[in-house]
Length: 441
Image (cartoon, rainbow, N blue to C red; front, side, top):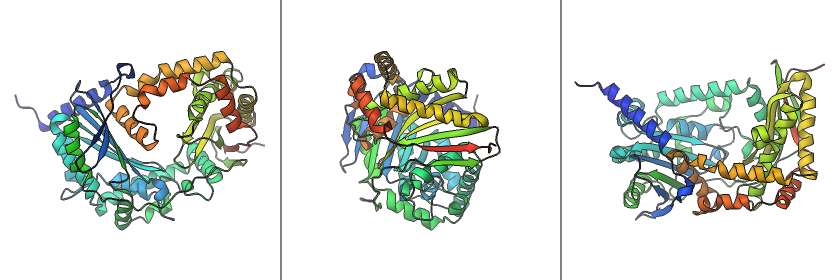
């Protein structure tokens, strides 16, 4: 009995989804990362695994939304949204149909520092998938209809952020801490900046960012080093040799502002911001452990216990490290009843002071390290996750052996290390505090 093409495509898509979700490589089984360099000099890091017939390719180019020109915020995000909307002689519909027929996934994204891409394919369709990826990277069409469609989608999202409490709070925190720096340009753009973007802008930004010299690549799956070497040259060798990036300066975020934004909603969103660390800082692992105790450990963290469990001020309160290429942030967040917002802020700030002056106990330190090392295998539960990590190791300079030594670095963090980094980040610094909610009094 013949099956319809649509049915066959759905089976292929389901197969990829199942393979992605079940393809796991545990660091306990000594993940071997190979450095592969193609004949044309394109480098990639490879974890070869033939357990399932899938290949995950992730890559990143230097230069993300921080490269948006003045007045054109959101351009790099629009570039990411349109590069798979037609390429070469395939218009948007033909390109997307071809991906669907092959059960191949190609996507692009950006943050402030880098432009990202990924491809997922089953091994029998590697050649066709590689050809489509090469087209998307080297010859995107930027036809009027898909560009306008993606602009409309991004404008809708930007407008939604203007009325969303988290979006408003994040924008206020950026304005306060990134003032005067290119990081303050909204990655997703504004309705006004997006409306004026054109295909010519996209072509210029593509030429500015996409190049051989700035790409880092991670590959995981059923592919040999020789096969990968040939694919690298097919996909990445045709790119321009160098990019045309504008320099971005390192800087220390501004602190000490207290900003309230009025919004007619039932509760108040609170953000507390401090300077953090870049990922290559020697103190980063100690800060990572410290943050887990402070607010990263959810049910076990100081913020959660003091804000929610003891006082019932919020469903949750947390902190996280946000490292960028040129600076870093430590951010605390909570949402609470409007009439208890000030109390919530006070309790959150007290935990920062307590960490800077007293620090955690030895038992808290050991519990944090046990969780952080024990949960590490969860980062290896799909090919895509591992491929993303391979890219991150390269962009942050952590080294090809990081998987093998990461848990040892966590275990090596001492109470003195945590106390030192807590003083460094939290002592004698007045945080920036953002409140978004109804006016009180």
